[in-house]
Image (cartoon, rainbow, N blue to C red; front, side):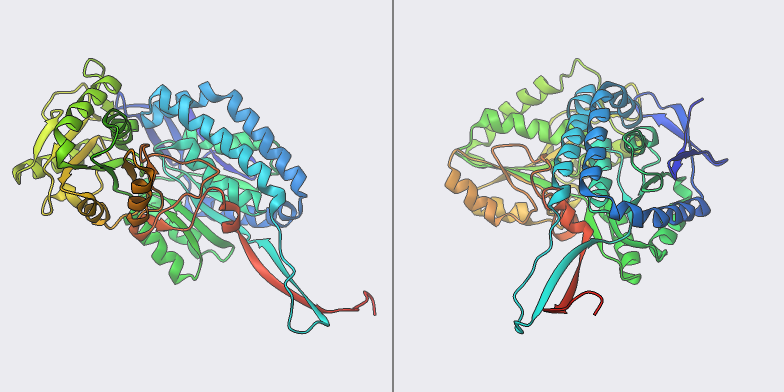
Length: 479
């Protein structure tokens, strides 16, 4: 049986502690992965620390060539590595090879073009006889942690900006998808990234707390980025704070989609269906609440039902979640809501499916405060439909959440759309498009309990620190 190795100092490293990796579509073990120990993780940090100076000093053009070559390699392997994501994360072919890998390829090329754009400034000083330089320099060793649910977009994003800025990286991947996430390391290795600049590890779940703590505490780790749940994000933020280390976080979400009374209902329905149930709703930007004005609710619901059936037909197999726990959570949320007066208007949580990891789309109408689903992120194929009287009430409900990552507004009036967008407490608002949207040319991140910091267009700035240098004008070297 295949064993996915760790990647340390540009070499495959196998360990005696193995992790079984299952295919969520079948529940069967498809391969194993070597699990890192604390000593393996700390060895990776030492290697990254040793590789830092040479990588930081490498000219931007040479770094750029490595990134461009990595993009070409990943693009060439799209079908192959996309299949691995299907097997490990339960992704569809459309999601893996049609969306996730191509977006990661574009991201690599975008970052490559920005490497030579890291610039400092020369400000005017109060004393004209002195000159000041504000330099931008890499931090050192970065700890990057990414989840399984968008293997390539989130995986490459976790490391590329930091690498482009001249840092070295310890990349801690999900044990649920180590083969597909390990591609980030092998692609860069094949592209000529120097040994030790990027080190990839995975570990057994029982070792997560200790290894993560040891890594964050290590003096060579200078900054952390984490994409994942808000619950785990709080733990990592606490550890980082105790060690006075900066951290970039993209955490959970409960994205609202507001459908106003002048919206194109067919467009809104299609976008809400896709935004709610793409990748089985297991995306941090997935639409969790559809907030619709009462005057158009009945017509919109019929459009929404048709859109869901067209995109996720009942004649096809049910959606796949990464584990049975996600199905249990979503069914429990729906049962709690219906026991308190909500109504399932699409789907059936009691339907028998071929495997415990499978569930079909469910729309719950009449969700209110007091129901668990009102505030809890579903992270699965369940969406709430909430009726409101007017725009003001829609905005109030959209903001009545601890999260603030992504959102959507549907209207045929751009002025109205912009007015509502400005009032929504969210890192991104998409007018007449689904809540799931991320690309390299846009800053990406959240507010409130959805995190802080930004990936995307300003991402490289997250991974450089500033240094001030001043000197007396007329200074001559050697005198």
